[in-house]
Amino acid sequence: ILNVEQSPQSLHVQEGDSTNFTCSFPSSNFYALHWYRWETAKSPEALFVMTLNGDEKKKGRISATLNTKEGYSYLYIKGSQPEDSATYLCAQYGEAGNMLTFGGGTRLMVKP
Amino acid sequence: DAGITQSPRHKVTETGTPVTLRCHQTENHRYMYWYRQDPGHGLRLIHYSYGVKDTDKGEVSDGYSVSRSKTEDFLLTLESATSSQTSVYFCAIRGLAEYNEQFFGPGTRLTVL
Image 1 (cartoon, each protein chain N blue to C red):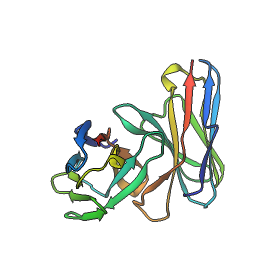
Image 2: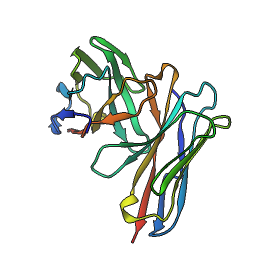
Image 3: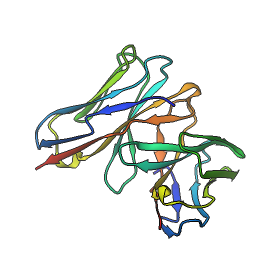
């Protein structure tokens, strides 16, 4: 079982603020890292799949970076909007790509 | 929409009773997963399957069993439900390529009294 940790656990920001969260994971035997967005009462949906050190991915106002050598990934949201309120999960694939281990998530609440 | 359905969507049961949850997919994906949602833990893997009759344990498999007799259906059984198994259960599938993202079903809310 991989040890995937996320910080902070929760975050309250005002509309228009930019914010970022951290996912840390074991740097040895890295295969892939995923970010998921999980809105209340819905199912998690994939945001990014990251596999290479130095990867940067972007989708609208959300972007992510990956550092496999030191074992962390950052998720950035520029100009947060109330509809960005959700729990953001990161997850790491273990060897053979069979199983994902999820972090505990960062719950983001954006106040209008 | 990855064509994943779960049934039932809600269930209330009593301690000690057996419960079976069903996950059904329509797109012939090889890998299927059962997770439970736990506060502070995000999602934790219970069991997964990599083909018909091929299954393996995840992080929190104690008290659960699974079966996959055909590609489209993955069943999760709580042999004797306990209150600690009250949770929301999500089924997921993964595409063909290694390290692909997973697509989740709508979830089943199970309450064990």
